[in-house]
Length: 209
Length: 281
Image (cartoon, rainbow over all chains, first blue to last red):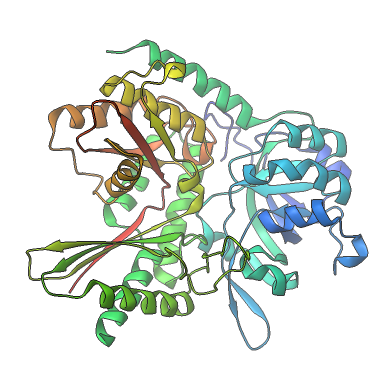
């Protein structure tokens, strides 16, 4: 299925992972691995990251355990029902916007996975290597498809203050697909692809006709 | 104007939950181009499944229903102010009914208005037309791709861009190279060239309303659109930036006259989920 930077296939089936991830799980993952996530994860985007870094809430202030969690960069569309909330659409948002916060969030809160789209930078890559964390890339815009892989909404934090888009949701997912594009060993598919495309870009600038 | 309001709500629903046929076809065709078993092929197959699922269940294909942008062609005698108020009412209703994600955030208080209306939100452009019918075009463009756009002031020595179409070509390649996978490729690229910053950014985005099968009527630009598409697809960024042959589905260029001293180029990047639609009244 999903492959490496050159677009060639690994031809191995996806690996099922149970959440939360263990340190062993994380160390065994490598860039290019396709995974299916099963279990609870949390969401968080711009406001959650800023809050975690600026206000430094203690673990006791957060109504659920986020240590070991996958933090999904996602601002879902939610529909309020009589009994709670259901997820209408829940694809990833662009991860690089929280680059200035993520390394600290990983270290402070013991996250084992960051999920989003577009990849992240050097600071995050270093923090992932030091703390044992991976970046999981899922498919931007595939919000209906991905919402169908969220079984239920378990809990929510900061709903009143941040609103449905920016709150931290805790979701139970099943067979939620992603590809490891940054691993805990310092490898980044994004860096490789960017370097290769920059080489081609430079070539294209030389050929003016 | 109750009926028109309902029409605009349905336009929102259609645009948020289904792709125009030319874009859907281009995504499907791109999937066939990619190597079997590659990240690119697999990504495009999930995207195709998502497009179908969203349409069949009337759910937004992407959770980011964007900043709504309206291009309204108004027959002589119809009030722009009344049309604006109808569009705002329809926006509030569509946010509940479709539903759309509330995306309008007050810069000072950081409060989300909750209904996708606010200062300058949604964006509405009016133009008078001699035609007897009212035409409302709507684009829902997500912020991931909006953030990936770039404005250039030529000349720009870093990329050797002079004030000519070769310079424009360099700007577009630079913007895509920098965007990588951040704006959800395969992209549709709108380019605007002209005299002022405000004019070219609008012009570039308007190009995204053109069908993928459409070529510029100006031969030099039609050639550049084709050439850039080939160049961009040789970068290897690929669907979602995971590598592959399809980085863009189309390049559309629009021009205005420029000032002797100014040569602005805006590159507006649209994600694969290029949601646009039309209501004729």
